[in-house]
Image 1: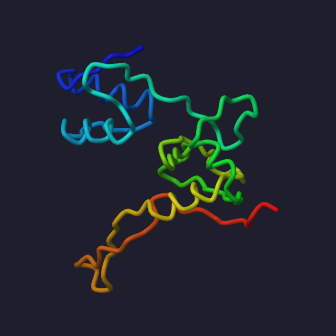
Image 2: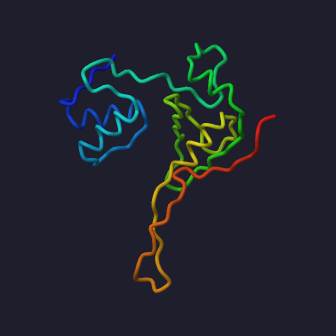
Length: 154
């Protein structure tokens, strides 16, 4: 059981975020680190900060399912594939309604439609070089984790 507070050192918070959530917050400012931890459900009031168990997209049937997981499991399933990129070959964590899925890049996985919807709303801004080669155009919104939709599971 880990105990973190708002007084915990920034390096310790960054290490915790990397170890438990796969977040690379190296060089991030303290408020950004705290916000990322709180966003992932970490209580910084000194209580238990042990994260919920992370399951892969191919979840075990032996899990003790809570209300959220039962709702997600009742949803229509979709097949998706998140390809690896030059910059990122690691697995992708998606947490619809606080229930975490770990999706292996390059593998076709079956997940609830809410996972696909969460990926659709995860966007980042990017810029492109103008034709003159001196100015930037944008910003343009692009998917943070582009994926291939392979269809619905029958």
